[in-house]
Image (cartoon, rainbow, N blue to C red; front, side):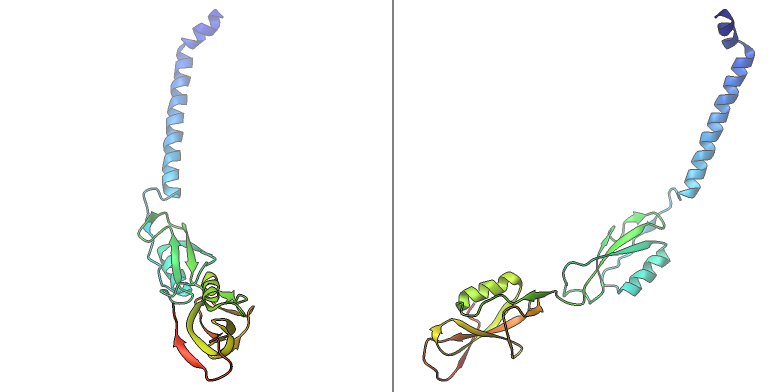
Length: 195
């Protein structure tokens, strides 16, 4: 045991410890320099504003900035943006990111998704209007015809064409309800939307 303690105090041991410390410091310093250069430490790119750009324009803009992209499925059509244009991005415009960072974009679809016309035949005009609104359709006008059921929906029209429950239309489409006026057959009259 005495020899071991004597060795710890010897000049050879102290020189080896000193060399080991110098080697560790040099390795740590070189590793830090390598990490800085390989990760572009301190170098950032500003995320461009991609709003309302087409997919092709977005692609060119991000490639020029040295960024990558991934297109996410779009949820709902936004009429404030052109079709197939960028409506959302993550991270947002103006953020500072590293080169080659992936930007996630959401594309505006070509139009509103289609919804199914609910079963509103032989339903009151008031209830039919509520059911249509619930699925995203609107009542543009109500036309009354001489039929016994007052305010009862007899059929539906979209752009002058007769539609049936179960047919699909783009969300926010405006429909015409043909309702009875409570009298026996006679002359039809048109009334604006009573809502």
